[in-house]
Length: 150
Image (cartoon, rainbow, N blue to C red):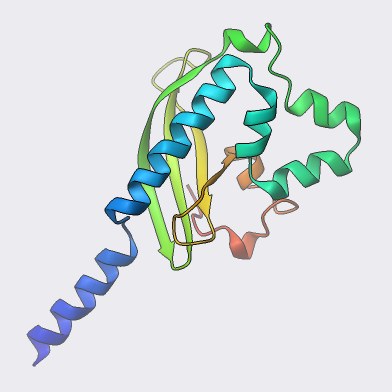
């Protein structure tokens, strides 16, 4: 009986930390769109894929702060990201947070740019938050940050 209970508990824990194929496909599609928007300077699309709470936060700070935060002008386009690898998944259905490490041509010495993907509908749609926004408790309260201490 103990072995059965342990196996069942292990299965539940492992399944809560991963994505199913539909969630993974949806995430991959959203990630590619987000990266393309950011790298190609498509501001409207970039803002559309950004976590709505982050967009609202910067809008509340005024037009100049909002424009500076989402500036994808030619000077900013010299920085691009690629090859996002998942480093952590926390799935508390229907909310899922995924931590990505992206290669950035603006970061050296093996460091990466960290971006979080967030779904509130079991992986049907995804929004993205850069690390500074994810860890800003005025955008995402600390209690709602599913990925902590990293």
